[in-house]
Length: 103
Length: 479
Image (cartoon, rainbow over the protein chains, first blue to last red):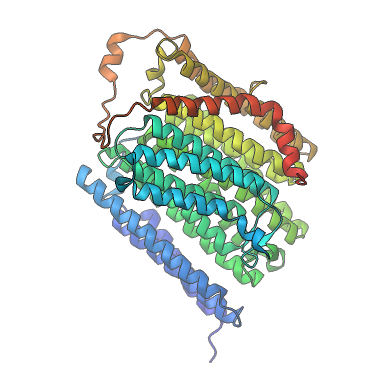
């Protein structure tokens, strides 16, 4: 049996949906960051699968994957740095506790 | 491609030199302020090189297409960065060298973003332009408010980026290429539309257009005013010019009527929602930065409007207005940066700093769109090109939003010129802003800040009547 492009796209769509649900529903900042990482993995899977099935003679999608992995790693670095800074001041990492500003 | 093509990349290298200077400012003469000064100088140099740059060339195997509107936007971005750094060298307190480096990197990302003609370069440019902004918003680590705004901005912005890149992966799959020239989304049915919609969710979030603007007020309120001056102007110019280029490339490659109708409906909904939500939210705000955040939402609405028409003149008018908006917004926030964050803190400004008060009035009038100022001419060209494209009712909505905007901008002028200070209330509510101790010698450099404001004011007054020439420079790039 041949596994086609659709199977990979469905898997990555499922991963993306799980990540999106987590990013919207979770209260802990760390859980949100983990959900965002799941979404970024869905993107990488999408790119690799599309490269394999749509443009097998080129490597565009693979290069794109490497770049998105680098940027999401940098984003997590910034996010954890801010999280530590905020935990030192406010002693919480829950998004719902961070509500000093309203309007 | 010959060597002249690569010379187009000289300004990016110049900006990188300034970044390197700022990162090693500790060991270089004049410390932090010197880094800001050098950054300002090199930004102005890059702006001049961008003005002189050759256009129409594909660089790096088609990854970059330097068009006349990209050239104008890049020159505007570098000019604004220079003005901001000049002010920073003059008046910013505490440790600023990282802010200088981050600002310059974000400007470089913005320039890359507006000249990209490939999805990969576009995504990298957007990331390079927004990642420094997260750090800048939370720059003072001892302010919990700033960190709270920064982490909200970070989470929403990363979410929007990921939605955008997810859309981009499908666009790559449909077009079988990442080049902008091949973005024919019309043959893929609803998948093409969904991909484009996801891409524009990301871009709407970057330019804080409704309904993806919720991060802006909190992020701006928590940050210091001089940082908001940068974050609210430069990345917005880049975002709107990128949106314009994308609309142009996608609409010209995907020619079916169904696709184009749906695409322009998306833009119309975002434009009207931005103007309506932004206007009403801005009316009730008491904090300068929150007002400017909502005014940014309204202005994103104005600038999305001509994109629906997509004629050559509407494109040029958006590019011109985005720079005018950036100048006025940056100027207004830089004037208020030396005062407190509330509008009430501006009371008595005309007695304390008369020149700054008049500059504030000029920026506010330009934002409203009162005739001699640049904002009026920018709006005039945008509105006329939209009417010519047959969307008169959109312009009526925009005009109402402009009239409403007079109420909240004039509040600044009223506070600065006409309100009497109420001593006891001011004493009680005066914000205590802890500032890290200055590292270098307290050299008197405030004249640099005044110079920056003078440049900004002069441009806002003088560029208005010259905007016809600017449009001509974008539309007929022969000179």
